[in-house]
Image (cartoon, rainbow, N blue to C red; front, side):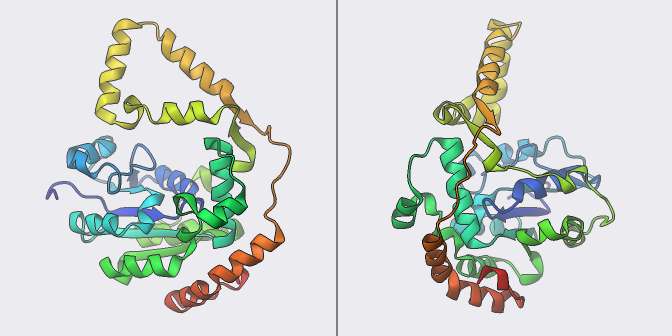
Length: 291
C-alpha cells in the first residue's frame, strides 16, 4: 500500500473482550505508538478514504517506536482481513477472546445502555442484530484469520486471564510485540468500559453526536474546528455541547443489575459447545470455564 508507511501490529477483536484496557496499556508503553483514536475502522468502514486518511491516525508517532491500532470489529469480516494482509503482509495480529456467553450478554447490555436499545435479550437470540450471537463462534473466525496470516503472526489471548493476572497477561502481549516486558502501565489494574457503571440519560443524543462527519472524519473535523474558532472564538457553542454531553452521562446511576437468565445461559452454552471444543484443539489449550 505504501512502502514508507507501515503498522507493526493490529488488534482485530473481540468487542467487549478487554480491547480498550489493552489499548490503554499499550498506549503507555514507551516503545509503542498506538493510533490516536481507538477503533480506527479503516479497513472495514473507511477504506475508500485511502492511506493518507489512515496515516493521519499515526501523525504523532516517531520513527523509533512500533505502531499499531485496535479495532475490535475487524475480527469477523473476511474482506477486512484480506485488506490488512494486502496492505501489511508482515503485520502482527492480536485477538482477545472472552467467554462467548458472557461476551454476548455484555455486548447486549452495552448497546442497550449506551445506544438506547429497547430490545429484550430473547429478541437478540432470535434475530441476532449486528451479529452479537454469531460473533461468538470464535473457531470459525480464527480459521479465517489463519487463512491470511501465519500462526506465528497471530497472538490469541483470553480476556478472562487478564482478571486473574493482569501483569502476566499484558507481558504476553509485550513479548509478542518485541518490547520491554517489564514495563508496568498505570492502566494495569484499572477497569475499562464497564457498561454496568456507565450509560446515558438520552443515548440517542450521544449516538447522533458520534456520527457527525466532524467527529468521524479527521480532515472534516480539523476544518470544522477551524471554522468554529472563527464564528465562535470563545468556544461557547462547543462548551454548550460538551456540557450537554457531560450532563447526559449517568455514572453509577443504574441501580438494578441485569442478570442473564439461566435458561438463556444454558441455551448459549449449548449453542457454542462444539465451537469451543474445536477452538481448544486449534489453540491447544483448555477452556473448561467456558463449557
